[in-house]
Amino acid sequence: MLNTDKDKPVYPWGHERRFNAYSNYFRNIYGSRVQKVSIDAGFTCPNRDGSNGTGGCTYCNNDAFNPSYCLPVNSVSVQLEEGIKFHRKRYNEAVTYLAYFQAYSNTYASLKKLRELYEEALSFPGVIGLIIGTRPDCVDDEKLDYLKALSLKYYIAVEFGIESCYDKTLKRINRGHSFDDAKRAVEMTADLGINTGAHFILGLPGETRQDMLNQVEIISGLPLKTVKFHQLQIIKGTTMEIEYKNNPADFELFTWEEYLGFFVTFLERLNPAIVVERFTGEAPPRFLTGETWGKKRTDQIVGLIEKRLEELDTWQGRLYKDKR
Ligand code: SF4
Image (cartoon, rainbow, N blue to C red):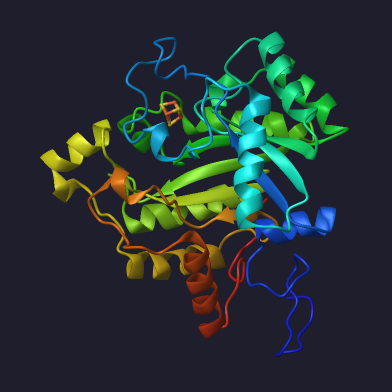
């Protein structure tokens, strides 16, 4: 903590919330709310089309995470228009937008194609930058140099699906890359000064709770600007659904109460410099099987985790040890 006034503590990230929150991070930069608008630009994925693997990651069903306004038959501009309309109904306050290239692997195309898609998004009124979700094996020097040049003028972030720090898990969920591949991609991107993010899934089969907790030290040592965590959810229509049905004992899905306790312990050890965008994933209930958490919405979950942090008088990074 920066100040020790018990009633109004201010943490290293410069505000009173007990974690380094994504929404506050943008407010600090732009002085107002910034809304992400998802785009499905019709990309595929090398882990599906046979160039690196087939069948995809065992938990993957992109439909479960794609908002209804994202239709790849529509152009980037039409999707932005629809998405902005959708968000305006919910939040009047948003004045600027980030185009979020979300579905599949959004750097998996020629540089020429990427330029067309990204620059169409950046020319849309109100769009101040791009968030690009991709795989560690879908970036190279040429693409990153281009993104670096864009980042001199716009907010540019590349978010890598890493999911686990353990190669045995990555193999088991058929990710088609190793943790070292992911680390290398993160370092290459961050070294160029591009905002670098990562996703991790907590609760993957074959990992004990202690294995999951031990990852926090590894994640804390990566040059990440932002991070998202999801609890494992079993999504219908995936290979993992079949594995789960065949052998449920192989999975230790978090109940909500378990996750709350686990995540607070995890957060206390996470590098306070890393901005946390999500604590949990929220696939629509119609896609889910196995352990579900009822009707809790993401904002309620954030509120409950913040309440627990307050009850325990703890915060992100309280037990973090800088080993870099
Ligand atoms: S999770 Fe991402 S990398 Fe894995 S199969 Fe789905 S789109 Fe491809």
